[in-house]
Length: 166
View 1 (cartoon, one colour):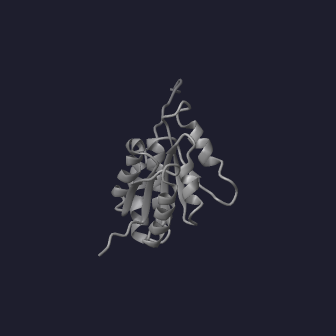
View 2 (cartoon, one colour):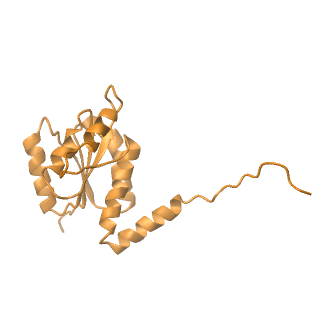
View 3 (tube, rainbow, N blue to C red):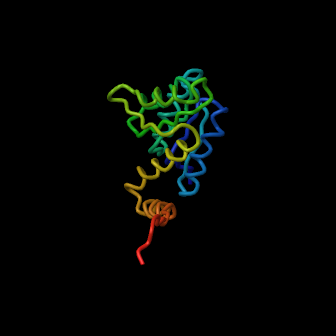
C-alpha cells in the first residue's frame, strides 16, 4: 500500500526544522500520516510548485508551512492550491519572527493563509488545527482530538482571601 500523507509540513530551509519538528511531533501523537519537506519559495520556486500539485494528487489535505523573514512560502503554496494552508512564522530575523507573522497574516483577499503563533508553539498549533480540519470527516480522529482536549483541562483553583465570619 503506498504512503498517503494527509498533511504536508513544508519549510524553506533546513534551519527551520528545529521549530517545525513540533508540528510533526503533534501529528505523530494523533496518528496522522504526514511528510516533511524542505523546499524554498525563493530558491526552488518551480520545484515547490510541482511538489504542491503532486502532494494534493497524492491525498494531502492540509499544508503547514513554516517560514521566516519575508515568509513567502505559505503564500506561494496557497497560490497553488485551494486546500487549507496554515502558516507558521519563524524567528531568526532581526525582528524575531514578527516580520514573518505580518507577512503571513497580510495575504491578499482571496488567497488565505491561516496564521499561528511564532515558533514552536505556532508549529504545534498548526498541527492541531490541521487535525481539527481533518476531524471534520474522520470520527476516530475527532475522538482522539476530544481526548487530547480533555487532557488539557485543569481543575479550577479557588483562593479565599479576607476575614471569615464567626
